[in-house]
Figure 1 (cartoon, rainbow, N blue to C red):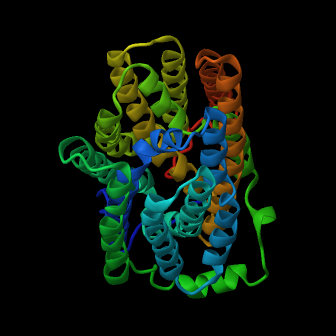
Figure 2: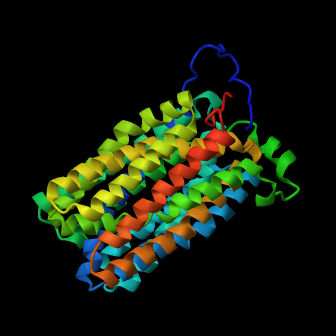
Figure 3: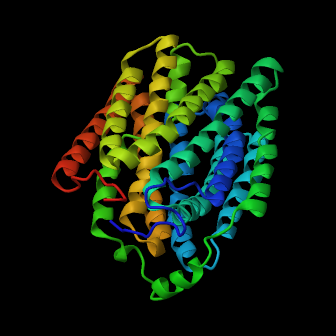
Length: 410
């Protein structure tokens, strides 16, 4: 793990503050997810109205998330070499903002797939540079807190988007297509925030030039990073698209008009727990937090497999939100801890690519098994089982190799 000096002018015993840049990226995520989550909770039902099977939904969501993941590696590596990460971030968010409203005029599932992939390409362009920018502008002692804040703002935006979707669909009675068009407004606010308030780290360009002109790439990343990627990959096999959980909730009796409200409740829990989970990983280490979160994920999926009523759906979604709060900040902080500053864009990008490819596989298999068996029990049980396996492997590595739990200050 890398060690970095404390921010100049701060006493060693004082807790550093979040950078204005980190706060700005949080608001960018807030507005972006507000727009995305107006659409996403109703997307499975929208596709079902077009006649898509569960396996087809698995293909659409898996490919939309997975294939553009190759862009994450390219964007992350490029962001380590360019003078300013900001404009890569801006370009990625701009592409997503423009693509989302066109879903409203799609007539067949293939058109939705193309638009979803273009939207996700935008995410692929922006994610690794944004995460690297957050890591570069954060004191190592509070990396978990910084990534937790970023995720909390993301989820707060999702809460707002879900509530807006519920009001548009359930209160004003708008159709799904008209509701989707509203995603353009918060997307424009996100772009304005980037243009005015997001800046790259002062002095980063000269350091990156010295360390990256030799075209160092993935092969130069530390060995412990690849160990983490291997273990996290086992968990990612369990991580099929959330579209299946939304379909499962529909099967459990949750009405379509209420789905956005359920989605908002999930993200409200994520918001409450993300800062706490990030801070907890700073204090006790990333490994224990990840292990507990992955165990919780496993039990949630097993619950969705075997329970079948509306109240169980609400309770399981609350537990699912706690899982996200525990793990999202901690998992990003692990990579920032293990990889030096000049290589972090590449590291985040490579992991994003691996994660995306595995999501394609997991989503297609889950949809195929659900259609084949006519039941959610087997596919969701398999997801839960892989999550529990990954948690056991991560716990074992924590005992044998990362006894400090992966803490930046260790």
